[in-house]
Length: 76
Image 1 (spheres, rainbow, N blue to C red):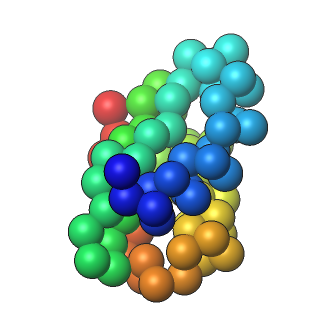
Image 2 (image 1 turned 180 degrees about the vertical axis):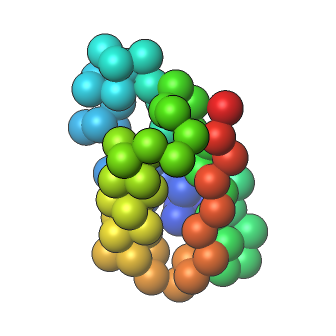
């Protein structure tokens, strides 16, 4: 497994019970060069909650793996 992915997933671990209780999930879909893609399920597209989680993920990536400068989201 990619060490960048391990670092990001370790940071996401504490969020998983909260997300699961609300019927939501966030997972790392892929990491390639300077890009990370998250798979986000159970959020309303474009709602404030979705935007807050995206901003939080961007901050998490910046503090954990600053070399990942491109952050993408797949919403389901």
